[in-house]
View 1 (cartoon, rainbow, N blue to C red):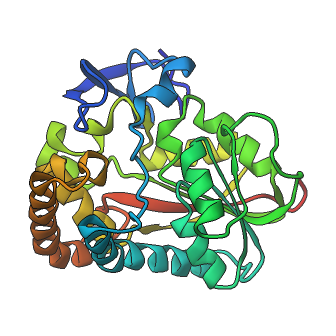
View 2: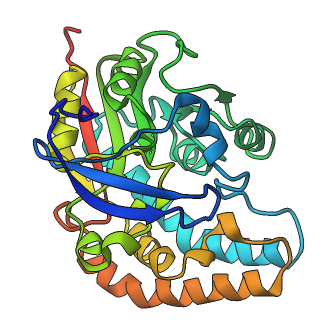
Length: 315
């Protein structure tokens, strides 16, 4: 086994977990790279198995009507909207390209794309889910396209000032290859923003194998350490710019889903009282965790971290 991020070959067993969504049966093992400290599954899933490991409702899409639609509107306002705004502000802080062309890879249902569009960026998106791409295009009016990361070039080379990948890199078999592929879509001097779970997070220290980040196996394939991210950027020809801890809502949400896995929208049954009760319990955990999350959002502690890199002007 070779590290997906630094290519070292020495590992130690980190933990054994099951899929907290219950979508993929069996037990999965994460190993820690002795070189950069990144984590990855062994055995790795096959390319043909990856798409089938995702439930249909993996990305949040507000229902059109009914009691679940009302609950979703509250959830969007209290949980998702602060995250979307925070990410826009982070990109503005580190990327000197306000209002320019931006590509969101792994765009899901398009909520982050819409937030960037509303902030003045010229946006496009790519995702493997046909259903999510259809929702983004038809419901939100976005230029979202269906495709797989690292395969072909769905847009012209050097077409974007910014490429974002929020919670994507840990889902792919070749993260360095994906970074190189995405860099081809960046113009020289363009910026890349990559959000990934943080292997140094206080949540891992507290929860260990109960942490939702590792219980996202087998969808989470390789989780990079800060050193792993730096190694991957270097191997992809990108220059590190800086990093910032994720939004407090992300931190509190990760803790809530770790403690109450059935609270995730991917397990929410249509119109079921039990499902709404689970979501309410998750909301209580989220509210209780939010004050601490506001204090523990430094990159050294954060549940996830947004890293920024730049493509050299001479490339």
